[in-house]
Length: 303
Image (cartoon, rainbow, N blue to C red):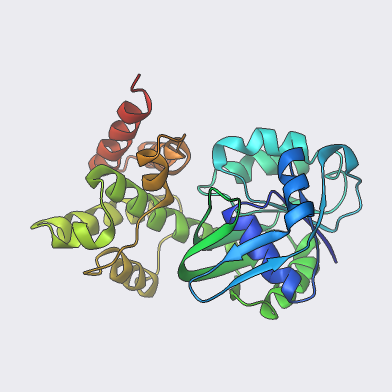
């Protein structure tokens, strides 16, 4: 299986590197400057337990050919259009595997490529790019969930999942990947909404007098929206999520908080705004989501 990964950022860079270590045929599609740096210095990956350097295959946009069986898209949600332009020369064949936040991208990709060519993927990792260009895994969390959305690509999806089983990260094959996408979305909307609204990580929120109660209410709002849209979150998944979202002493926070505090563009419209839209369409009240979204709009519009 020939795999193309768009970019070598926190998500694509990390999971691609682990797949290369496991013997997978992975090529990165990179911008010229990043391509030159990695070809010269290698791809450096820093984890809580080790640091390693790989010499991966990489190409630039003008070198692309339609020769890949799987094209992995892992940009920020607001960069999807640019990503699709970048892979256009390679995307006339093969299956697309997006691992973006939210769900808007799935509809966009279905409209462009057809459901038969769009797998489902969920990445759980806290990772970033350091000033030196290394991929830095911030916590021990590193899980990838994939699954087929159409029988046409089920065989390839399972083959890819088998490759992931050999790699040094947690891997799950979901028989209902769209439910998995919703499960992550309700979790991430809560984590991003609360950590940005409170400007603090989970542990700090848990220490506040009404922190755990507010976090739990926020999560309940998101779960109610998922249920109204036909994707109810299982009780076991809710318990696991709330344990992470209300853990005392935890330094866990959404990447949206890092982006906000560093003055970067954020995915608030794709994670919070789209969740609110999904709730409004079904008549679900979501005041906490609206408060978090309003806060992000104000912050992003500051001059």
